[in-house]
Length: 328
Image 1: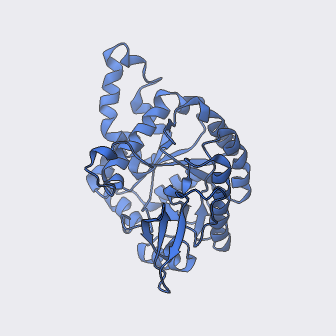
Image 2: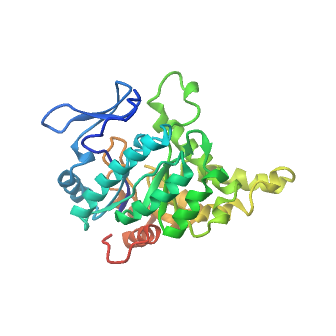
Image 3: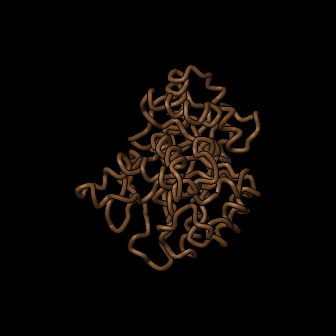
């Protein structure tokens, strides 16, 4: 089971207020080539694999994947638009993912999105997410600069915990791009891992994982830099005031509250992550269908760790709250 793949719809309705930054899809030809447009510029070149079930299933056979978990392309999360406008986009994306999954239930499981900039509205929309048959929501590493540990978001976490819905955290609009020499393409390569670590530390230091112990949280890209800064976090807790009060518990134990996908591209890095968090917290991921994807992700994890892929599939089913009848 590949737990980290993305969806872009073939079309997006026009934004009610005609905001120039509203995303749109530009189809380039009969071969399936397309682009996600933002502000009149190409944000990302894509193709029909983003929405075409048949092409996805063909590629799954090549990658030896039985099931894809499909979540929105992160830029579609739209935490920066007025909540009412974002709400309409969320509904469109959720219905698109649900339709894809409903037509091919043996191959696809869906994760949706909600207007996180309005936590009360987002919490209410979780019922609709569940009613569509989706198993969770994807959110950014911050909500338009509001850190994920902010108590204003507790309403969403509480509702997700009660509804038994996964919260997948994906890096988005990271800090530090102004220090990368005007190279925005470095965001996903260099800044995303740091951004994910910031989000995880915010959740930990603000007690989110303690207040919502049954909330299932997936950190994308192997948790980014979190496992690598973990020794430093743990050491800081032993120094004394004020650092000793940053974490409610030993950070080495707190990180085991999260799930982590295997998208690290490097065998030693994946083995290090498992040593820090345990094999029961690891799920397979690829970042399909984008160019940065990890090829044959299940084989990569299995061969790296010497762990049968059924272990990863069982972890994924537990994380998603789906029964053992779902294929690996």
